[in-house]
Amino acid sequence: MADLVYPPVIAFAKTMFRALGMKITIEGAEHVPATGGAVIACNHISYLDFIFCGLGARPSKRLVRFMAKESIFRHRVGGPLMRGMHHIPVDRDAGLASYKAALAALQAGEVVGVFPEATISPSFMIKDMKSGAARLASATGTPLVPMVLWGTQRFWTKGRPRDLGQRGVAITIIAGEPLHPARRDNGDTVMAELRNRMSALLDRAQREYPQRPKGPDDSWWLPAHLGGTAPEPDVYEPEAM
Image 1 (cartoon, rainbow, N blue to C red):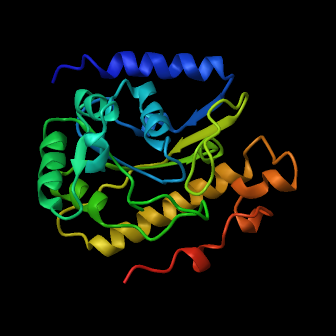
Image 2 (cartoon, one colour):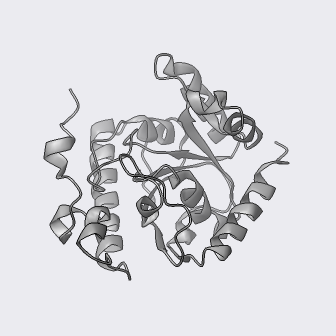
């Protein structure tokens, strides 16, 4: 498919990264295949995560088609951009159409990006995850690549004011070894393994992160177990029914 919108959007984003002096580290990019379909499953801690998850696939020269909530596609500015980049709208009341669109993209050799937690995690830890990523990968025989982000929440996350002008913020992007689920594999087992891998990658990203809060008022972006004031997962993120 023709990509007239995606390249200039990427160029603009990279210009902004440089202007803000971001310290971006990408690890494990070799796990994103250079050709053929693949599913990237990424954690969700910020409204900007799709930008940085997509950046994690750029060393492999891949453009990621993200599954995103349908309301974004109705936005007067965001909508044309989302459609121009061939992202996939998700209507939670009629999810079959988006699932079929994602299948078609994978079968056409595209990389599809999924946020299995569905919503931003206030604790900045991995929440319970929906099974769509595993189902897409197993149905199409494509690799399922775990990816995690850290630092993006400092710019714009749920329950906090936007602070898009910060300079010198470190962003960590780590991709892990892909899973290769087959049609006969148990979906719950695959998702449990995916969650374990993403949790391990996120723990490493958090512990090796090169920056610390500037003071007590800035500790909101660290999880509680690392001394931050982000809410505990079991208080704000009850298990799905």
